[in-house]
Length: 308
Image (cartoon, one colour):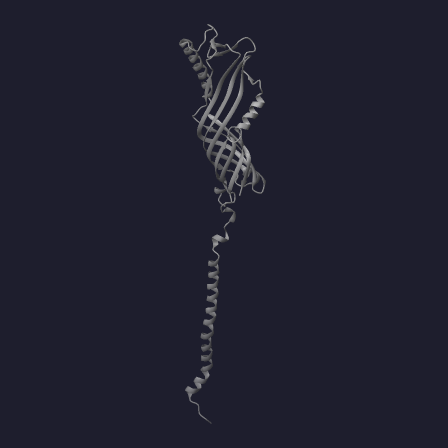
């Protein structure tokens, strides 16, 4: 029998264990490397699609919220505006605020409007007394304004269209008319500032005008009523608080004008002309005092708008 040394026998016994230990270090690192690879891939995927894109709302991007409007205003003429209000913002406040640049003018339609006014007045005009009437009335106006709108109910269905508006406006209103005297009963007689006057002829032509230049803070309310898609009906009502008041002017021709008491012609008589100018100034002051009590100019608008 062949003899085996103790050392050789010990080597044979423990060699399988060494073999197993030799395999484990080879296979286990491979598994770890695979797991690490998976983790790295997951991290890379997160960077491929940033979180801010995942939660962004495309309807909050321009031109969503851009709004255009056109309508009419009885106190300013054809009205238009351009502004911005986006109800899709996630912010509680941003969805409730909007801005507008507002403008209006009678210029494109004043001739047609004035014809309509005078057709309504008719050939007989508006009667002041038996001999005096107002004819040939005309109107012209415009305004410009910058407004901030606040929608207290945000985008809550029907109430979401209700708004409060504030800002600054400037504009003017011009009114004019002819004062016509026609001899029908006796002489053409009228009173001005406490003085009585008469005309020799059968017809007298005078003029009255009102000019109101205003500017100041605006405060009002209104609503946007949805019709379909982005089309809406809009309404605004408010006032401009202004320190500028309407100015009244009156023109009465002196040719043919006589003082009713003396029967003397006013034109060419320095004393009578002075009395006439004093009476006219008194009449204008009385009218101006009434106009100075009005410290606000009304703004009313109705029309259609489109919000992108």
